[in-house]
Image (cartoon, rainbow, N blue to C red; front, side, top):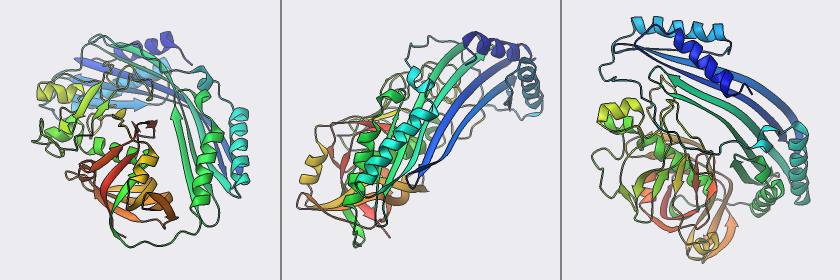
Length: 437
Protein backbone atom coordinates (compact mmCIF):
# COMPACT_ATOMS: atom_id res chain seq x y z
CA UNK A 1 0.00 0.00 0.00
CA UNK A 2 1.03 3.61 -0.48
CA UNK A 3 0.14 4.50 3.10
CA UNK A 4 -1.64 7.49 4.59
CA UNK A 5 1.20 10.01 4.27
CA UNK A 6 1.84 9.35 0.56
CA UNK A 7 -1.87 9.29 -0.29
CA UNK A 8 -2.55 12.58 1.47
CA UNK A 9 0.57 14.04 -0.15
CA UNK A 10 -0.82 13.23 -3.61
CA UNK A 11 -4.17 14.78 -2.67
CA UNK A 12 -2.44 17.94 -1.45
CA UNK A 13 -0.36 18.19 -4.64
CA UNK A 14 -3.49 18.00 -6.78
CA UNK A 15 -5.29 20.56 -4.62
CA UNK A 16 -2.37 22.98 -4.94
CA UNK A 17 -2.62 22.75 -8.72
CA UNK A 18 -6.32 23.70 -8.75
CA UNK A 19 -6.57 27.41 -9.59
CA UNK A 20 -10.26 27.73 -8.79
CA UNK A 21 -12.70 28.74 -6.05
CA UNK A 22 -13.08 25.30 -4.50
CA UNK A 23 -11.64 21.88 -5.27
CA UNK A 24 -11.99 18.28 -4.18
CA UNK A 25 -9.59 15.39 -4.85
CA UNK A 26 -10.29 11.67 -4.42
CA UNK A 27 -7.70 8.90 -4.50
CA UNK A 28 -8.77 5.26 -4.72
CA UNK A 29 -6.24 2.46 -5.11
CA UNK A 30 -7.06 -1.25 -5.11
CA UNK A 31 -5.13 -4.50 -5.21
CA UNK A 32 -7.63 -7.15 -6.31
CA UNK A 33 -7.04 -10.90 -6.59
CA UNK A 34 -9.43 -13.49 -7.98
CA UNK A 35 -9.40 -17.26 -8.27
CA UNK A 36 -12.08 -18.60 -10.60
CA UNK A 37 -13.01 -22.24 -11.10
CA UNK A 38 -15.47 -24.08 -13.38
CA UNK A 39 -16.36 -27.74 -13.81
CA UNK A 40 -14.35 -28.38 -10.61
CA UNK A 41 -11.11 -27.02 -12.09
CA UNK A 42 -9.35 -23.73 -11.48
CA UNK A 43 -9.08 -21.97 -14.83
CA UNK A 44 -8.16 -18.42 -13.86
CA UNK A 45 -6.05 -16.76 -11.22
CA UNK A 46 -5.56 -13.03 -11.68
CA UNK A 47 -4.33 -10.05 -9.73
CA UNK A 48 -4.85 -6.42 -10.67
CA UNK A 49 -3.39 -3.26 -9.17
CA UNK A 50 -5.35 -0.18 -10.18
CA UNK A 51 -5.64 3.40 -9.10
CA UNK A 52 -7.86 6.42 -9.66
CA UNK A 53 -7.43 10.08 -8.92
CA UNK A 54 -10.51 12.23 -9.42
CA UNK A 55 -10.69 16.01 -9.19
CA UNK A 56 -13.76 18.25 -8.94
CA UNK A 57 -13.02 21.93 -9.59
CA UNK A 58 -15.47 24.75 -8.83
CA UNK A 59 -15.55 28.19 -10.47
CA UNK A 60 -18.59 30.05 -9.17
CA UNK A 61 -21.41 27.69 -10.08
CA UNK A 62 -19.46 25.94 -12.81
CA UNK A 63 -18.23 22.43 -11.99
CA UNK A 64 -15.55 20.51 -13.86
CA UNK A 65 -14.58 16.89 -13.17
CA UNK A 66 -11.58 14.94 -14.45
CA UNK A 67 -10.04 11.56 -13.66
CA UNK A 68 -6.79 9.75 -14.25
CA UNK A 69 -5.28 6.38 -13.36
CA UNK A 70 -1.64 7.36 -12.82
CA UNK A 71 -0.77 8.05 -9.18
CA UNK A 72 2.35 10.15 -9.53
CA UNK A 73 2.52 13.79 -8.40
CA UNK A 74 2.85 15.21 -11.92
CA UNK A 75 -0.07 13.10 -13.13
CA UNK A 76 -2.23 14.23 -10.21
CA UNK A 77 -1.47 17.86 -10.99
CA UNK A 78 -2.32 17.30 -14.66
CA UNK A 79 -5.73 15.88 -13.73
CA UNK A 80 -6.32 18.91 -11.49
CA UNK A 81 -5.53 21.35 -14.27
CA UNK A 82 -7.82 19.46 -16.66
CA UNK A 83 -10.68 19.68 -14.15
CA UNK A 84 -10.20 23.45 -13.90
CA UNK A 85 -10.20 23.77 -17.70
CA UNK A 86 -13.47 21.83 -17.85
CA UNK A 87 -15.02 24.02 -15.15
CA UNK A 88 -14.26 27.12 -17.23
CA UNK A 89 -16.42 25.88 -20.11
CA UNK A 90 -19.13 24.09 -18.09
CA UNK A 91 -22.67 25.40 -17.87
CA UNK A 92 -23.62 26.94 -14.54
CA UNK A 93 -25.40 24.67 -12.08
CA UNK A 94 -27.73 26.99 -10.18
CA UNK A 95 -28.43 24.34 -7.52
CA UNK A 96 -24.77 24.05 -6.55
CA UNK A 97 -23.93 25.79 -3.25
CA UNK A 98 -20.60 24.53 -1.95
CA UNK A 99 -18.39 21.56 -1.31
CA UNK A 100 -18.75 20.24 2.26
CA UNK A 101 -16.72 21.39 5.23
CA UNK A 102 -14.87 18.90 7.47
CA UNK A 103 -16.83 17.00 10.11
CA UNK A 104 -15.64 14.45 12.69
CA UNK A 105 -15.16 11.02 11.16
CA UNK A 106 -15.94 7.90 13.22
CA UNK A 107 -13.40 5.21 13.91
CA UNK A 108 -14.40 2.16 11.89
CA UNK A 109 -12.61 -1.17 11.51
CA UNK A 110 -12.59 -1.71 7.74
CA UNK A 111 -9.34 -3.65 7.30
CA UNK A 112 -8.40 -7.29 7.95
CA UNK A 113 -4.85 -8.53 7.52
CA UNK A 114 -5.99 -12.03 6.51
CA UNK A 115 -7.74 -10.58 3.46
CA UNK A 116 -4.83 -8.33 2.58
CA UNK A 117 -2.42 -11.28 2.72
CA UNK A 118 -4.64 -13.71 0.80
CA UNK A 119 -2.61 -15.60 -1.82
CA UNK A 120 -3.32 -17.95 -4.76
CA UNK A 121 -2.32 -21.01 -2.74
CA UNK A 122 -4.81 -20.35 0.07
CA UNK A 123 -7.61 -19.58 -2.38
CA UNK A 124 -6.76 -22.74 -4.37
CA UNK A 125 -6.96 -24.80 -1.18
CA UNK A 126 -10.42 -23.35 -0.46
CA UNK A 127 -11.48 -24.19 -4.01
CA UNK A 128 -10.12 -27.73 -3.59
CA UNK A 129 -12.19 -28.18 -0.44
CA UNK A 130 -15.38 -26.98 -2.16
CA UNK A 131 -14.74 -29.19 -5.19
CA UNK A 132 -14.30 -32.17 -2.88
CA UNK A 133 -17.63 -31.52 -1.15
CA UNK A 134 -19.39 -31.17 -4.52
CA UNK A 135 -17.83 -34.42 -5.78
CA UNK A 136 -19.05 -36.21 -2.69
CA UNK A 137 -22.59 -35.37 -3.81
CA UNK A 138 -21.98 -36.37 -7.44
CA UNK A 139 -21.76 -32.73 -8.56
CA UNK A 140 -19.27 -30.22 -9.90
CA UNK A 141 -18.36 -26.83 -8.47
CA UNK A 142 -17.99 -23.50 -10.24
CA UNK A 143 -17.48 -20.04 -8.87
CA UNK A 144 -14.98 -17.45 -7.74
CA UNK A 145 -13.17 -16.44 -4.59
CA UNK A 146 -11.86 -12.89 -4.46
CA UNK A 147 -9.92 -10.69 -2.05
CA UNK A 148 -9.34 -6.95 -2.34
CA UNK A 149 -7.27 -4.42 -0.44
CA UNK A 150 -8.06 -0.75 -1.00
CA UNK A 151 -6.82 2.67 0.02
CA UNK A 152 -9.26 5.56 -0.05
CA UNK A 153 -8.51 9.22 0.51
CA UNK A 154 -10.47 12.47 0.11
CA UNK A 155 -9.34 16.07 0.55
CA UNK A 156 -10.87 19.41 -0.39
CA UNK A 157 -9.98 23.06 -0.24
CA UNK A 158 -12.31 23.65 2.73
CA UNK A 159 -10.21 21.45 5.00
CA UNK A 160 -11.56 17.93 4.49
CA UNK A 161 -8.75 15.36 4.84
CA UNK A 162 -9.70 11.71 5.23
CA UNK A 163 -7.93 8.40 4.63
CA UNK A 164 -8.71 4.75 5.32
CA UNK A 165 -7.47 1.33 4.26
CA UNK A 166 -10.15 -1.29 3.63
CA UNK A 167 -10.49 -4.94 2.67
CA UNK A 168 -13.27 -7.09 1.32
CA UNK A 169 -13.59 -10.69 0.20
CA UNK A 170 -16.32 -12.67 -1.51
CA UNK A 171 -17.25 -16.17 -2.56
CA UNK A 172 -19.80 -16.99 -5.24
CA UNK A 173 -20.41 -20.73 -5.60
CA UNK A 174 -22.66 -22.80 -7.87
CA UNK A 175 -22.71 -26.57 -7.44
CA UNK A 176 -24.34 -28.29 -10.42
CA UNK A 177 -24.97 -31.49 -12.31
CA UNK A 178 -26.77 -32.14 -15.59
CA UNK A 179 -30.18 -31.74 -13.98
CA UNK A 180 -29.95 -29.02 -11.35
CA UNK A 181 -27.84 -26.48 -9.49
CA UNK A 182 -27.47 -25.03 -6.02
CA UNK A 183 -26.02 -21.72 -4.81
CA UNK A 184 -24.10 -20.32 -1.87
CA UNK A 185 -22.34 -17.03 -1.27
CA UNK A 186 -20.27 -15.33 1.39
CA UNK A 187 -19.05 -11.76 1.77
CA UNK A 188 -17.13 -9.93 4.42
CA UNK A 189 -14.16 -7.84 5.42
CA UNK A 190 -12.16 -10.76 6.84
CA UNK A 191 -11.61 -13.80 4.61
CA UNK A 192 -10.51 -15.78 7.68
CA UNK A 193 -14.20 -15.96 8.65
CA UNK A 194 -15.11 -17.85 5.48
CA UNK A 195 -15.78 -21.57 5.91
CA UNK A 196 -15.67 -22.97 2.34
CA UNK A 197 -16.93 -26.38 3.45
CA UNK A 198 -20.11 -24.95 4.96
CA UNK A 199 -20.80 -22.97 1.78
CA UNK A 200 -20.16 -26.00 -0.42
CA UNK A 201 -22.40 -28.25 1.66
CA UNK A 202 -25.27 -25.76 1.39
CA UNK A 203 -24.91 -25.44 -2.38
CA UNK A 204 -24.50 -29.19 -2.90
CA UNK A 205 -27.58 -30.02 -0.84
CA UNK A 206 -29.60 -27.58 -2.95
CA UNK A 207 -28.27 -29.18 -6.13
CA UNK A 208 -29.21 -32.70 -5.02
CA UNK A 209 -32.65 -31.58 -3.85
CA UNK A 210 -33.26 -29.83 -7.17
CA UNK A 211 -32.99 -32.92 -9.37
CA UNK A 212 -36.04 -33.81 -11.43
CA UNK A 213 -37.68 -30.37 -11.38
CA UNK A 214 -41.15 -30.09 -12.90
CA UNK A 215 -43.14 -27.18 -14.33
CA UNK A 216 -45.59 -25.23 -12.19
CA UNK A 217 -48.58 -23.12 -13.33
CA UNK A 218 -48.01 -19.37 -13.42
CA UNK A 219 -49.68 -17.01 -10.98
CA UNK A 220 -49.33 -15.55 -7.51
CA UNK A 221 -47.80 -17.69 -4.78
CA UNK A 222 -46.72 -17.14 -1.21
CA UNK A 223 -42.93 -17.25 -1.20
CA UNK A 224 -40.18 -17.89 1.29
CA UNK A 225 -37.20 -15.85 0.07
CA UNK A 226 -33.75 -16.80 1.27
CA UNK A 227 -31.34 -13.91 2.04
CA UNK A 228 -29.74 -13.79 -1.43
CA UNK A 229 -33.16 -13.07 -2.98
CA UNK A 230 -34.09 -10.57 -0.26
CA UNK A 231 -30.79 -8.76 -0.87
CA UNK A 232 -31.77 -8.13 -4.49
CA UNK A 233 -35.07 -6.59 -3.42
CA UNK A 234 -33.26 -4.32 -0.98
CA UNK A 235 -30.69 -3.19 -3.53
CA UNK A 236 -33.33 -2.20 -6.07
CA UNK A 237 -35.47 -0.52 -3.41
CA UNK A 238 -32.49 1.60 -2.38
CA UNK A 239 -31.57 2.43 -5.96
CA UNK A 240 -35.14 3.29 -6.97
CA UNK A 241 -36.23 5.40 -4.07
CA UNK A 242 -34.10 5.75 -0.94
CA UNK A 243 -31.74 8.42 -2.29
CA UNK A 244 -32.43 12.16 -2.04
CA UNK A 245 -32.09 12.95 -5.75
CA UNK A 246 -34.87 10.56 -6.77
CA UNK A 247 -37.06 12.05 -4.02
CA UNK A 248 -36.33 15.63 -5.09
CA UNK A 249 -37.02 14.82 -8.74
CA UNK A 250 -40.30 13.06 -7.92
CA UNK A 251 -39.09 9.65 -9.12
CA UNK A 252 -39.06 7.93 -5.74
CA UNK A 253 -41.87 5.73 -4.39
CA UNK A 254 -41.54 7.95 -1.30
CA UNK A 255 -42.30 11.20 -3.19
CA UNK A 256 -45.08 12.98 -1.31
CA UNK A 257 -45.31 10.14 1.22
CA UNK A 258 -42.70 11.00 3.85
CA UNK A 259 -44.08 10.23 7.30
CA UNK A 260 -46.66 7.84 5.86
CA UNK A 261 -46.90 4.06 6.10
CA UNK A 262 -45.42 2.71 2.88
CA UNK A 263 -44.42 -0.87 3.79
CA UNK A 264 -45.55 -3.50 6.27
CA UNK A 265 -45.30 -2.74 10.00
CA UNK A 266 -42.80 -5.57 10.40
CA UNK A 267 -40.36 -3.92 7.97
CA UNK A 268 -37.64 -1.59 9.30
CA UNK A 269 -34.78 -0.60 7.01
CA UNK A 270 -31.68 1.40 7.79
CA UNK A 271 -28.28 2.10 6.29
CA UNK A 272 -25.15 1.90 8.44
CA UNK A 273 -21.62 1.69 7.04
CA UNK A 274 -20.18 1.82 10.56
CA UNK A 275 -21.68 -1.58 11.44
CA UNK A 276 -18.93 -4.24 11.24
CA UNK A 277 -21.43 -6.77 9.86
CA UNK A 278 -21.40 -4.82 6.60
CA UNK A 279 -18.46 -3.82 4.42
CA UNK A 280 -17.67 -0.96 6.74
CA UNK A 281 -16.44 2.51 5.78
CA UNK A 282 -15.86 5.61 7.94
CA UNK A 283 -16.62 8.26 5.29
CA UNK A 284 -18.13 8.76 1.83
CA UNK A 285 -16.68 10.01 -1.47
CA UNK A 286 -16.82 13.61 -0.20
CA UNK A 287 -14.99 12.79 3.03
CA UNK A 288 -18.18 13.16 5.06
CA UNK A 289 -18.75 10.87 8.06
CA UNK A 290 -20.85 7.75 7.71
CA UNK A 291 -23.60 7.17 10.27
CA UNK A 292 -26.69 5.10 10.80
CA UNK A 293 -29.75 6.43 8.97
CA UNK A 294 -33.17 4.90 9.63
CA UNK A 295 -35.04 5.04 6.33
CA UNK A 296 -38.18 3.00 6.99
CA UNK A 297 -39.33 2.46 10.59
CA UNK A 298 -42.06 -0.13 11.15
CA UNK A 299 -43.28 0.52 7.63
CA UNK A 300 -43.26 4.33 7.94
CA UNK A 301 -41.09 6.45 5.62
CA UNK A 302 -38.68 8.50 7.75
CA UNK A 303 -36.00 9.90 5.46
CA UNK A 304 -33.65 9.25 2.55
CA UNK A 305 -29.87 9.50 2.26
CA UNK A 306 -28.12 12.74 1.23
CA UNK A 307 -24.84 13.97 -0.18
CA UNK A 308 -23.78 17.63 0.11
CA UNK A 309 -25.40 18.63 -3.21
CA UNK A 310 -28.86 17.24 -2.43
CA UNK A 311 -28.57 18.33 1.21
CA UNK A 312 -27.91 21.94 0.19
CA UNK A 313 -30.69 21.74 -2.37
CA UNK A 314 -33.19 20.43 0.20
CA UNK A 315 -32.10 22.34 3.30
CA UNK A 316 -30.77 19.18 4.95
CA UNK A 317 -27.43 17.83 6.18
CA UNK A 318 -25.36 15.27 4.31
CA UNK A 319 -25.80 11.79 5.74
CA UNK A 320 -22.46 10.66 4.26
CA UNK A 321 -23.75 8.91 1.16
CA UNK A 322 -22.04 10.73 -1.71
CA UNK A 323 -20.84 8.80 -4.75
CA UNK A 324 -17.89 9.98 -6.88
CA UNK A 325 -18.67 13.08 -8.94
CA UNK A 326 -19.93 13.33 -11.57
CA UNK A 327 -22.84 10.94 -11.28
CA UNK A 328 -26.46 11.08 -12.40
CA UNK A 329 -28.04 8.95 -9.66
CA UNK A 330 -27.20 11.08 -6.62
CA UNK A 331 -26.55 9.62 -3.17
CA UNK A 332 -27.45 5.99 -2.51
CA UNK A 333 -27.62 3.71 0.54
CA UNK A 334 -24.87 1.13 0.03
CA UNK A 335 -24.88 -0.57 3.46
CA UNK A 336 -28.54 -1.48 3.91
CA UNK A 337 -29.93 -3.53 6.79
CA UNK A 338 -33.35 -5.12 7.21
CA UNK A 339 -34.37 -5.61 10.83
CA UNK A 340 -34.62 -9.28 11.87
CA UNK A 341 -37.73 -10.92 13.23
CA UNK A 342 -38.31 -14.06 15.29
CA UNK A 343 -38.87 -16.81 12.71
CA UNK A 344 -36.54 -19.51 11.47
CA UNK A 345 -36.50 -20.63 7.85
CA UNK A 346 -38.23 -23.84 8.96
CA UNK A 347 -40.93 -21.81 10.71
CA UNK A 348 -41.67 -20.05 7.44
CA UNK A 349 -41.84 -23.28 5.48
CA UNK A 350 -44.00 -25.04 8.08
CA UNK A 351 -46.49 -22.15 8.07
CA UNK A 352 -46.97 -22.31 4.28
CA UNK A 353 -49.87 -24.35 2.92
CA UNK A 354 -48.79 -24.01 -0.71
CA UNK A 355 -46.01 -21.74 -1.94
CA UNK A 356 -42.46 -21.52 -3.23
CA UNK A 357 -39.03 -21.53 -1.61
CA UNK A 358 -36.69 -19.24 -3.58
CA UNK A 359 -32.90 -19.44 -3.30
CA UNK A 360 -31.99 -16.38 -5.34
CA UNK A 361 -32.88 -14.18 -8.31
CA UNK A 362 -31.01 -13.63 -11.56
CA UNK A 363 -30.94 -11.02 -14.34
CA UNK A 364 -33.22 -8.57 -12.54
CA UNK A 365 -34.30 -5.41 -14.38
CA UNK A 366 -36.55 -2.43 -13.65
CA UNK A 367 -39.91 -2.12 -15.37
CA UNK A 368 -41.44 0.87 -13.53
CA UNK A 369 -39.22 3.04 -11.34
CA UNK A 370 -41.75 4.87 -9.16
CA UNK A 371 -43.89 1.78 -8.61
CA UNK A 372 -40.71 -0.27 -7.93
CA UNK A 373 -41.78 -2.98 -10.38
CA UNK A 374 -38.94 -5.32 -11.31
CA UNK A 375 -38.67 -8.52 -13.31
CA UNK A 376 -36.17 -11.36 -13.26
CA UNK A 377 -35.69 -15.11 -12.98
CA UNK A 378 -35.33 -17.54 -10.14
CA UNK A 379 -32.09 -19.54 -10.18
CA UNK A 380 -30.15 -22.32 -8.47
CA UNK A 381 -32.95 -23.77 -6.39
CA UNK A 382 -36.73 -23.24 -6.63
CA UNK A 383 -38.95 -25.59 -4.63
CA UNK A 384 -42.66 -26.20 -4.12
CA UNK A 385 -43.88 -26.06 -0.52
CA UNK A 386 -47.04 -27.98 0.33
CA UNK A 387 -48.62 -28.42 3.76
CA UNK A 388 -45.55 -27.08 5.55
CA UNK A 389 -42.96 -29.21 3.77
CA UNK A 390 -40.65 -28.78 0.81
CA UNK A 391 -42.32 -31.20 -1.57
CA UNK A 392 -40.54 -31.01 -4.94
CA UNK A 393 -38.15 -28.99 -7.10
CA UNK A 394 -39.69 -26.64 -9.66
CA UNK A 395 -38.35 -25.36 -12.97
CA UNK A 396 -37.25 -21.74 -12.86
CA UNK A 397 -39.88 -19.03 -13.31
CA UNK A 398 -39.88 -15.37 -14.30
CA UNK A 399 -41.37 -12.97 -11.76
CA UNK A 400 -42.79 -9.49 -12.29
CA UNK A 401 -43.36 -7.81 -8.96
CA UNK A 402 -43.55 -4.46 -7.16
CA UNK A 403 -41.02 -4.42 -4.33
CA UNK A 404 -43.20 -2.05 -2.30
CA UNK A 405 -46.16 -4.39 -2.71
CA UNK A 406 -44.04 -7.39 -1.71
CA UNK A 407 -42.65 -5.66 1.40
CA UNK A 408 -46.19 -4.60 2.31
CA UNK A 409 -47.16 -8.27 2.48
CA UNK A 410 -44.38 -9.67 4.66
CA UNK A 411 -45.87 -12.35 6.89
CA UNK A 412 -42.73 -13.55 8.68
CA UNK A 413 -39.19 -12.20 9.12
CA UNK A 414 -36.18 -14.39 9.79
CA UNK A 415 -34.22 -14.00 13.00
CA UNK A 416 -30.81 -14.55 11.41
CA UNK A 417 -29.28 -12.02 9.03
CA UNK A 418 -26.59 -12.54 6.40
CA UNK A 419 -24.45 -10.18 4.35
CA UNK A 420 -25.41 -10.55 0.70
CA UNK A 421 -23.96 -8.66 -2.24
CA UNK A 422 -26.19 -5.66 -1.53
CA UNK A 423 -27.44 -5.74 2.07
CA UNK A 424 -27.45 -7.47 5.44
CA UNK A 425 -30.80 -9.24 5.52
CA UNK A 426 -32.77 -12.17 6.96
CA UNK A 427 -35.06 -14.52 5.05
CA UNK A 428 -38.65 -13.36 4.46
CA UNK A 429 -42.02 -14.98 3.97
CA UNK A 430 -44.16 -12.85 1.63
CA UNK A 431 -47.86 -13.49 1.26
CA UNK A 432 -48.01 -13.15 -2.52
CA UNK A 433 -45.46 -12.88 -5.29
CA UNK A 434 -46.30 -12.78 -8.99
CA UNK A 435 -44.75 -15.28 -11.44
CA UNK A 436 -45.50 -14.39 -15.04
CA UNK A 437 -43.66 -16.73 -17.42
